[in-house]
Image (cartoon, rainbow, N blue to C red):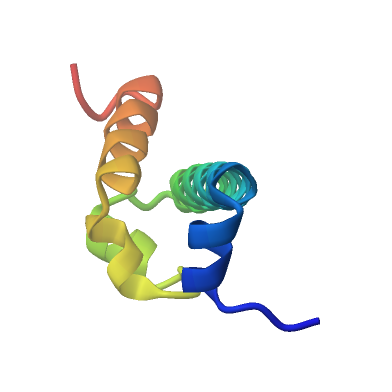
Length: 91
């Protein structure tokens, strides 16, 4: 049975609301997973660079990312700052 979203909202408002909540919750969970994966990837690359005698800088890390422009996301910058502190590059 096919039912349009308009008919679903009109005829089954509670069901429509439940579906929408579940969808938003799933999207939020997926976004959090992507953020965690990016942070882990940045951490791993930064440590590799450090172990190879290179300073883990943003542009160097971005060259190793699946999507280089991800380095400008807040979580990426926060992670980079944290790992640089841990490795002694920043105070």
